[in-house]
Image (cartoon, rainbow, N blue to C red):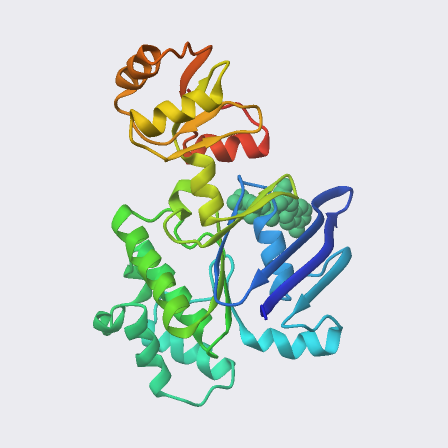
Length: 307
Ligand SMILES: Nc1ncnc2c1ncn2[C@@H]1O[C@H](COP(=O)(O)OP(=O)(O)OP(=O)(O)O)[C@@H](O)[C@H]1O
């Protein structure tokens, strides 16, 4: 049976007359990495804050680890770790001193945890260096270490790779995947950039203007962005036969509108056109289709695509 970490049901949030979230209903399964994707102002931070108990919905229900009533949810919140907006760190202290402060504030006595977490996030070697002299990537990793105090089962990270250089992005990506794999942690990570999250998440939630526009798995996203040759003709059965017998491929799909999508030979379009023509098929349409991740995201939120 699937284990659910979070269910939000018709969650809405208004600030005076402005609805920052409208009827948000999402379900997160344990052990997956969810990418919450939306442009600036889409409502990502607002949603994450409500899930983490830092703010309250105007309407709707949030169920955490199966608990939706206020009292039980309060204790379920202890099973969450979050990095939402930058955590309170003291620039004049080192990474381990900062961790110690947060550990003591949370009432966690285990002193060894500080070094364990610094090692986990790759900050063990920084010694006494003050946090004010850290790079952005190091600060983000310290923020993640703080979020990991308390050994959370569900980790919420708001834009953890925003502003990082490519190497920093790779490091955070590896860390997130490792935590999911080694600790079976469920992770919700936000970003305004779908390609950036593409190699990290297992599932995607696309949000725009406070509304969930689409939820999809990595596989579904890959399918949506896969490139193919679209061929239309009067005799699709005959075309399928030619693809199999002459081009030796079964890597195609006959669509409902009877067009055929061919997922091979993208670099040899002329050869495909010549072969089908020589075998008596006259295409009424022949084109290469498929989206980039960016264009797919824009099409889902209803904007204009780039060519
Ligand atoms: N406390 C608040 N008072 C008034 N409006 C708010 C408040 N918090 C958020 N908003 C508004 O709600 C909308 C959603 O904001 P939110 O910070 O959740 O977006 P976001 O997707 O996280 O964007 P960003 O990537 O820019 O952080 C924005 O229009 C924002 O101005």
